[in-house]
Image (cartoon, rainbow, N blue to C red; front, side, top):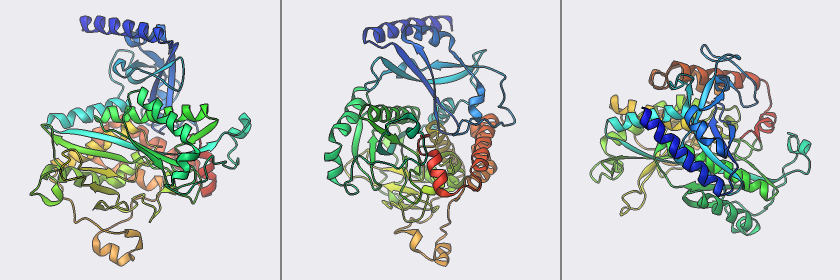
Length: 465
């Protein structure tokens, strides 16, 4: 242990020296709370070695913060007592292209004795990834990030005024080249900043809602995928500021309009071979891949409390808007909550699945960890996928949906939280402390917005993510 600590100190000193030579003066250490807010402590670059050795202090109360910075409590967390230590992941330290003089690193959380904090979401994601590896499964995951960009108001007060009308900097049609032309400098700077930071952009395009865009990044291991989506969002935010713009990743930017999703893509592999490419199996899925996805599909009502954590999330989850509000799956069906993407037959990495329901209010570490836990439970239980659905379930009558076994996913945070509370596989995977903290935040969010109109919820949460 001593030699490992000495090696880490030396690595941190060398890294700090390199950052200083690059003009980096400060390092942002981030974690994501259970309300999906990216929280931060910063240290001078020359203090990075000390942070790597001893950590940076922070309160465990952040695990029960809500999206509006109110503080609730669970059976294990809440109040002013206690201290944790943030330890930066030195392998992920990244010089920020759109924030000169700054670098970033995701952080893991431990107690003062060096024990893993039981509510550390990043270590939960790592633990589930390692659990999959023990049965020979490798997961590659990636996120699609959607955001709406608007012109920033002139004054600080206007920038925080929920009633401020949105001023979109592009007026072109959905998916139209016009938007790319109007914001070509901005979009170029987004892709350039991501590339400089080591993020592999697969595609970027205008989306459906006014001022809306989407960027898709290359998949990686689950923890890296969650790190990447945090870095992607904060990079887009920084580039937007430099262009006099403001980016919103909120599930509902304007009530009644199409919202922002953050779809999770996942592929299963064994010994480097895709389990989505079995030529003699139904839908090309190896039996354990089908069981894994069956576990995910079965757990979706509970998973919504993880991937759709805000009352604003349920403004987005509306039928016939490609958000996946029915508990069903389909082959290349963008209205199914779980979409199987076949890819080109000659592409060994082309096949994978997509969870359509999730949004950027979710803690991405919780999201990837919970999905893995649900999928592994599916394998352990030998779950089966039902027949895939075609077309839009939203246009079917109630009786026809019932005949096909298609049910509506939870329509409120409370419904989803109730399902999470009753999910023994997810509770066991998360542990009592993390599971309880998530539920406490969900209950507090729902209570806070009880009686609020849709437009009030959208306005209050528009700039939180």
